[in-house]
Image (cartoon, rainbow, N blue to C red; front, top):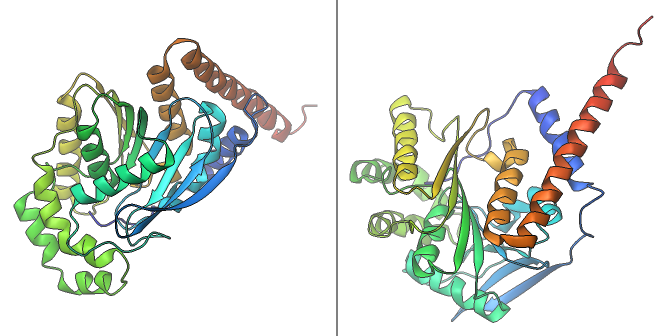
Amino acid sequence: MIERRPTTLPRSRRLVNLVLLLLTLCLSAAPARAQAEDHMVDVGGYRLHFHVVKGSGLPILFEAGGGDDASTWNSILAPIANVTGATLITYDRAGFGSSEVAPLDYNIIKEVEGLEIGLAKLGYAGNIMLVAHSLGGAYATVYASRHPDQVKSAVLLDISLPCFNTDAELESMMQDKKQIATLKAKGGGWPSLISNYAANARLMRTIPFPGKVPAIAITSEKTPFDDKAEADRWRTCHQEFAAESPNIRAITAYGTGHYIFNDSPELVVAAIAESYARALGGPGGAQVAQRYLDSAMDFINESNRREATSQPAKK
Protein backbone atom coordinates (compact mmCIF):
# COMPACT_ATOMS: atom_id res chain seq x y z
CA MET A 1 0.00 0.00 0.00
CA ILE A 2 1.31 3.45 -0.90
CA GLU A 3 1.55 5.54 2.22
CA ARG A 4 -0.62 8.56 2.93
CA ARG A 5 0.43 11.47 5.05
CA PRO A 6 -0.81 11.74 8.65
CA THR A 7 -4.29 13.01 9.30
CA THR A 8 -4.71 16.26 11.20
CA LEU A 9 -5.93 15.90 14.76
CA PRO A 10 -7.73 18.51 16.86
CA ARG A 11 -5.38 21.08 18.39
CA SER A 12 -6.14 19.93 21.95
CA ARG A 13 -5.14 16.35 21.14
CA ARG A 14 -1.95 17.47 19.41
CA LEU A 15 -1.01 19.51 22.47
CA VAL A 16 -1.60 16.56 24.78
CA ASN A 17 0.58 14.36 22.58
CA LEU A 18 3.28 17.01 22.46
CA VAL A 19 3.31 17.38 26.25
CA LEU A 20 3.52 13.60 26.66
CA LEU A 21 6.38 13.34 24.22
CA LEU A 22 8.32 16.23 25.76
CA LEU A 23 7.90 14.79 29.24
CA THR A 24 9.07 11.37 28.09
CA LEU A 25 12.10 12.97 26.47
CA CYS A 26 13.01 14.71 29.71
CA LEU A 27 12.62 11.84 32.19
CA SER A 28 14.92 12.35 35.13
CA ALA A 29 15.20 8.59 35.55
CA ALA A 30 16.14 7.94 31.94
CA PRO A 31 19.59 6.82 30.81
CA ALA A 32 22.01 9.39 29.41
CA ARG A 33 21.43 10.43 25.80
CA ALA A 34 22.56 7.59 23.58
CA GLN A 35 25.16 7.97 20.85
CA ALA A 36 23.86 7.79 17.28
CA GLU A 37 25.86 6.44 14.35
CA ASP A 38 25.24 6.34 10.60
CA HIS A 39 26.62 3.55 8.43
CA MET A 40 26.65 2.86 4.69
CA VAL A 41 26.93 -0.92 4.37
CA ASP A 42 27.63 -2.88 1.18
CA VAL A 43 25.03 -5.64 1.05
CA GLY A 44 25.99 -7.06 -2.34
CA GLY A 45 26.24 -4.58 -5.20
CA TYR A 46 24.60 -1.65 -3.44
CA ARG A 47 24.82 0.04 -0.03
CA LEU A 48 22.13 0.45 2.60
CA HIS A 49 22.09 3.35 5.05
CA PHE A 50 21.64 2.38 8.69
CA HIS A 51 21.03 4.80 11.57
CA VAL A 52 21.94 3.19 14.89
CA VAL A 53 21.21 4.66 18.32
CA LYS A 54 23.63 2.79 20.55
CA GLY A 55 22.30 1.10 23.65
CA SER A 56 22.43 -2.30 25.29
CA GLY A 57 20.37 -5.45 25.64
CA LEU A 58 18.01 -6.62 22.90
CA PRO A 59 18.29 -4.43 19.75
CA ILE A 60 15.10 -3.04 18.17
CA LEU A 61 14.83 -2.94 14.37
CA PHE A 62 12.34 -0.52 12.78
CA GLU A 63 10.69 -1.13 9.39
CA ALA A 64 9.19 1.98 7.76
CA GLY A 65 6.17 2.03 5.50
CA GLY A 66 6.28 2.02 1.70
CA GLY A 67 8.02 5.10 0.30
CA ASP A 68 9.19 6.22 3.75
CA ASP A 69 12.76 6.08 5.02
CA ALA A 70 14.47 5.86 8.41
CA SER A 71 13.68 9.49 9.23
CA THR A 72 9.98 8.65 9.66
CA TRP A 73 10.86 7.28 13.13
CA ASN A 74 12.93 10.25 14.32
CA SER A 75 10.27 11.77 16.57
CA ILE A 76 9.94 8.71 18.81
CA LEU A 77 13.48 7.30 18.91
CA ALA A 78 14.58 9.41 21.89
CA PRO A 79 11.70 8.43 24.22
CA ILE A 80 12.06 4.77 23.21
CA ALA A 81 15.80 4.88 23.90
CA ASN A 82 15.16 6.58 27.23
CA VAL A 83 12.64 4.01 28.41
CA THR A 84 14.23 0.83 27.02
CA GLY A 85 17.93 1.67 26.97
CA ALA A 86 18.09 -0.52 23.85
CA THR A 87 20.08 -0.19 20.65
CA LEU A 88 17.66 1.19 18.03
CA ILE A 89 18.24 0.39 14.36
CA THR A 90 16.47 2.26 11.58
CA TYR A 91 17.45 2.01 7.94
CA ASP A 92 16.54 3.19 4.46
CA ARG A 93 15.40 0.49 2.08
CA ALA A 94 17.16 0.42 -1.30
CA GLY A 95 16.63 3.61 -3.28
CA PHE A 96 15.09 5.59 -0.41
CA GLY A 97 16.71 8.07 1.95
CA SER A 98 20.48 7.71 1.68
CA SER A 99 20.50 4.08 0.50
CA GLU A 100 21.64 3.22 -3.00
CA VAL A 101 19.32 1.82 -5.65
CA ALA A 102 19.16 -1.97 -5.97
CA PRO A 103 18.47 -3.91 -9.20
CA LEU A 104 14.97 -3.18 -10.49
CA ASP A 105 13.83 -6.81 -10.28
CA TYR A 106 14.62 -7.19 -6.57
CA ASN A 107 11.69 -8.80 -4.78
CA ILE A 108 10.93 -8.58 -1.07
CA ILE A 109 12.92 -11.75 -0.27
CA LYS A 110 16.07 -10.35 -1.90
CA GLU A 111 15.55 -7.05 -0.08
CA VAL A 112 15.36 -8.83 3.27
CA GLU A 113 18.47 -10.82 2.37
CA GLY A 114 20.24 -7.49 1.86
CA LEU A 115 18.98 -6.32 5.25
CA GLU A 116 20.31 -9.51 6.85
CA ILE A 117 23.75 -8.93 5.33
CA GLY A 118 23.77 -5.37 6.62
CA LEU A 119 22.73 -6.36 10.13
CA ALA A 120 25.34 -9.11 10.23
CA LYS A 121 28.11 -6.71 9.17
CA LEU A 122 27.03 -4.28 11.88
CA GLY A 123 27.04 -7.05 14.49
CA TYR A 124 23.27 -7.38 14.96
CA ALA A 125 22.57 -10.80 13.46
CA GLY A 126 21.33 -12.31 16.74
CA ASN A 127 18.21 -11.83 18.85
CA ILE A 128 16.13 -8.78 17.99
CA MET A 129 12.77 -7.04 18.44
CA LEU A 130 10.82 -5.66 15.47
CA VAL A 131 8.71 -2.51 15.11
CA ALA A 132 6.96 -2.13 11.74
CA HIS A 133 4.56 0.29 10.10
CA SER A 134 2.26 -0.32 7.10
CA LEU A 135 4.16 -1.94 4.20
CA GLY A 136 7.07 -2.39 6.61
CA GLY A 137 4.94 -5.12 8.17
CA ALA A 138 5.57 -7.28 5.10
CA TYR A 139 9.33 -6.91 5.49
CA ALA A 140 9.07 -7.62 9.22
CA THR A 141 6.99 -10.72 8.46
CA VAL A 142 9.56 -12.04 6.00
CA TYR A 143 12.38 -11.36 8.46
CA ALA A 144 10.50 -13.01 11.34
CA SER A 145 9.61 -16.03 9.19
CA ARG A 146 13.31 -16.50 8.43
CA HIS A 147 14.37 -15.99 12.07
CA PRO A 148 11.44 -17.11 14.26
CA ASP A 149 13.72 -18.09 17.16
CA GLN A 150 15.65 -14.82 17.13
CA VAL A 151 12.73 -12.39 16.85
CA LYS A 152 11.69 -12.10 20.48
CA SER A 153 8.75 -9.72 20.06
CA ALA A 154 7.15 -7.28 17.65
CA VAL A 155 4.99 -4.16 17.62
CA LEU A 156 3.03 -3.90 14.37
CA LEU A 157 1.50 -0.53 13.49
CA ASP A 158 -1.35 -0.56 10.97
CA ILE A 159 0.56 -3.06 8.85
CA SER A 160 -0.37 -4.05 5.32
CA LEU A 161 -1.79 -7.59 5.35
CA PRO A 162 -2.15 -10.21 2.58
CA CYS A 163 -5.85 -10.50 3.44
CA PHE A 164 -6.41 -6.97 2.18
CA ASN A 165 -4.36 -7.28 -0.99
CA THR A 166 -6.78 -9.45 -2.96
CA ASP A 167 -6.38 -9.85 -6.71
CA ALA A 168 -9.25 -7.42 -7.20
CA GLU A 169 -7.59 -4.85 -4.91
CA LEU A 170 -4.24 -5.19 -6.66
CA GLU A 171 -5.86 -4.86 -10.08
CA SER A 172 -7.71 -1.75 -8.94
CA MET A 173 -4.49 -0.19 -7.62
CA MET A 174 -2.63 -0.88 -10.84
CA GLN A 175 -5.39 0.76 -12.89
CA ASP A 176 -4.39 4.21 -11.66
CA LYS A 177 -1.86 4.77 -14.44
CA LYS A 178 -1.43 8.46 -13.66
CA GLN A 179 -0.45 7.85 -10.03
CA ILE A 180 1.84 4.97 -11.01
CA ALA A 181 3.62 7.15 -13.58
CA THR A 182 3.96 9.98 -11.05
CA LEU A 183 5.47 7.70 -8.42
CA LYS A 184 7.86 6.00 -10.83
CA ALA A 185 9.01 9.42 -12.03
CA LYS A 186 10.32 10.13 -8.52
CA GLY A 187 13.15 7.71 -9.25
CA GLY A 188 15.21 6.13 -6.51
CA GLY A 189 13.44 3.10 -5.10
CA TRP A 190 10.01 4.04 -6.45
CA PRO A 191 10.20 2.25 -9.84
CA SER A 192 11.13 -1.02 -8.12
CA LEU A 193 8.53 -0.59 -5.38
CA ILE A 194 5.72 0.03 -7.88
CA SER A 195 6.81 -2.55 -10.45
CA ASN A 196 7.15 -5.33 -7.87
CA TYR A 197 4.25 -4.38 -5.60
CA ALA A 198 1.64 -6.83 -6.92
CA ALA A 199 4.09 -9.76 -7.15
CA ASN A 200 5.35 -9.07 -3.63
CA ALA A 201 1.78 -8.84 -2.32
CA ARG A 202 0.95 -12.23 -3.82
CA LEU A 203 4.16 -13.70 -2.44
CA MET A 204 3.22 -12.50 1.04
CA ARG A 205 0.13 -14.74 0.95
CA THR A 206 2.53 -17.69 1.33
CA ILE A 207 4.51 -16.21 4.26
CA PRO A 208 2.55 -16.04 7.52
CA PHE A 209 3.75 -14.12 10.54
CA PRO A 210 5.25 -16.72 12.93
CA GLY A 211 2.72 -17.66 15.59
CA LYS A 212 5.44 -18.18 18.19
CA VAL A 213 6.51 -14.51 18.09
CA PRO A 214 4.68 -12.37 20.68
CA ALA A 215 3.27 -9.27 19.00
CA ILE A 216 1.18 -6.20 19.76
CA ALA A 217 -0.82 -5.31 16.64
CA ILE A 218 -2.15 -1.74 16.72
CA THR A 219 -4.73 -0.61 14.16
CA SER A 220 -5.64 3.02 13.59
CA GLU A 221 -9.22 4.12 14.21
CA LYS A 222 -9.20 6.09 10.95
CA THR A 223 -7.91 3.67 8.34
CA PRO A 224 -5.84 4.75 5.31
CA PHE A 225 -8.97 4.53 3.16
CA ASP A 226 -11.83 6.98 2.67
CA ASP A 227 -14.06 4.36 1.04
CA LYS A 228 -16.17 2.68 3.74
CA ALA A 229 -16.00 -0.78 2.15
CA GLU A 230 -12.22 -0.62 1.94
CA ALA A 231 -11.95 0.74 5.48
CA ASP A 232 -14.18 -2.03 6.84
CA ARG A 233 -12.19 -4.67 4.97
CA TRP A 234 -8.93 -3.23 6.37
CA ARG A 235 -10.30 -3.52 9.92
CA THR A 236 -11.62 -7.04 9.29
CA CYS A 237 -8.24 -8.19 7.99
CA HIS A 238 -6.55 -6.87 11.11
CA GLN A 239 -9.09 -8.59 13.33
CA GLU A 240 -8.55 -11.89 11.50
CA PHE A 241 -4.77 -11.48 11.71
CA ALA A 242 -4.92 -10.99 15.49
CA ALA A 243 -7.19 -14.02 15.85
CA GLU A 244 -4.66 -16.28 14.14
CA SER A 245 -2.41 -16.55 17.17
CA PRO A 246 -2.89 -16.29 20.95
CA ASN A 247 0.47 -14.49 20.99
CA ILE A 248 -0.95 -11.47 19.14
CA ARG A 249 -2.57 -8.74 21.21
CA ALA A 250 -4.84 -6.44 19.19
CA ILE A 251 -5.34 -2.76 20.02
CA THR A 252 -7.34 -0.08 18.23
CA ALA A 253 -5.61 3.29 18.48
CA TYR A 254 -8.55 5.64 18.95
CA GLY A 255 -8.26 9.13 17.50
CA THR A 256 -5.42 8.20 15.16
CA GLY A 257 -4.81 8.01 11.44
CA HIS A 258 -2.48 5.66 9.61
CA TYR A 259 0.67 7.21 11.11
CA ILE A 260 -0.14 6.07 14.62
CA PHE A 261 3.29 6.95 15.99
CA ASN A 262 2.76 10.59 14.97
CA ASP A 263 -0.82 10.87 16.18
CA SER A 264 -0.36 8.96 19.43
CA PRO A 265 3.35 8.63 20.23
CA GLU A 266 2.60 7.93 23.88
CA LEU A 267 0.61 4.80 22.95
CA VAL A 268 3.36 3.51 20.65
CA VAL A 269 6.09 4.15 23.24
CA ALA A 270 3.97 2.32 25.84
CA ALA A 271 3.44 -0.66 23.52
CA ILE A 272 7.13 -0.87 22.69
CA ALA A 273 8.10 -0.56 26.37
CA GLU A 274 5.70 -3.34 27.37
CA SER A 275 6.74 -5.63 24.52
CA TYR A 276 10.41 -5.00 25.19
CA ALA A 277 10.12 -5.59 28.94
CA ARG A 278 8.33 -8.90 28.36
CA ALA A 279 10.92 -9.97 25.79
CA LEU A 280 13.80 -9.23 28.16
CA GLY A 281 12.19 -10.78 31.20
CA GLY A 282 14.08 -11.07 34.49
CA PRO A 283 15.77 -8.07 36.14
CA GLY A 284 16.33 -6.30 32.81
CA GLY A 285 12.66 -6.43 31.90
CA ALA A 286 11.71 -5.28 35.38
CA GLN A 287 14.00 -2.26 35.06
CA VAL A 288 12.43 -1.26 31.73
CA ALA A 289 8.94 -1.64 33.20
CA GLN A 290 9.94 0.45 36.21
CA ARG A 291 11.39 3.21 34.03
CA TYR A 292 8.16 3.34 32.06
CA LEU A 293 6.05 3.40 35.24
CA ASP A 294 8.22 6.21 36.57
CA SER A 295 7.65 8.16 33.36
CA ALA A 296 3.89 7.64 33.61
CA MET A 297 3.90 8.81 37.23
CA ASP A 298 5.97 11.87 36.31
CA PHE A 299 3.52 12.70 33.53
CA ILE A 300 0.46 12.39 35.76
CA ASN A 301 2.06 14.56 38.43
CA GLU A 302 3.21 17.17 35.90
CA SER A 303 -0.21 17.19 34.23
CA ASN A 304 -1.86 17.82 37.60
CA ARG A 305 0.58 20.64 38.32
CA ARG A 306 -0.07 22.26 34.96
CA GLU A 307 -3.82 21.97 35.37
CA ALA A 308 -3.66 23.42 38.88
CA THR A 309 -1.53 26.41 37.86
CA SER A 310 -3.74 27.11 34.84
CA GLN A 311 -6.92 27.42 36.96
CA PRO A 312 -7.97 30.89 38.17
CA ALA A 313 -7.05 31.49 41.77
CA LYS A 314 -9.93 30.82 44.19
CA LYS A 315 -11.09 33.75 46.31
